Image (tube, rainbow, N blue to C red; front, side):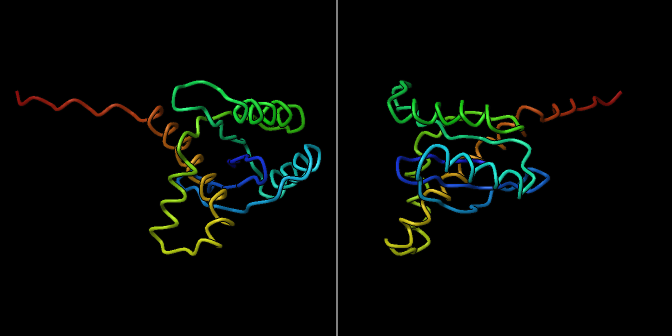
Length: 147
């Protein structure tokens, strides 16, 4: 499961059991840290999640601003609350990419506003899953020479 935490909303995405796809699940309004943690914990339990990836909005310069510090605080709180691993993941430009995807799909501005966070969460999860598959990829066998 991936989370795209913003100041007002958190986007959520899920992967399939084989870790091949990342699908937007929902966007929920932030209320308080405790309410957000309870909602995320319920999602983890309901969907039998084995790992939570939290988008970390690192600046293009590589520095961590206040948004990244807030996301890191969420990671720390989730680590204390959940019984599954929690990973912070660089989410640079995922919200912009999600917005672009929705525009290309001719989604209205009103619907884009409601969907962008969960689509960004899916892009974060996709990036994380791709990193796993590339790090676990078996090397190509060397061509056999004719003898």
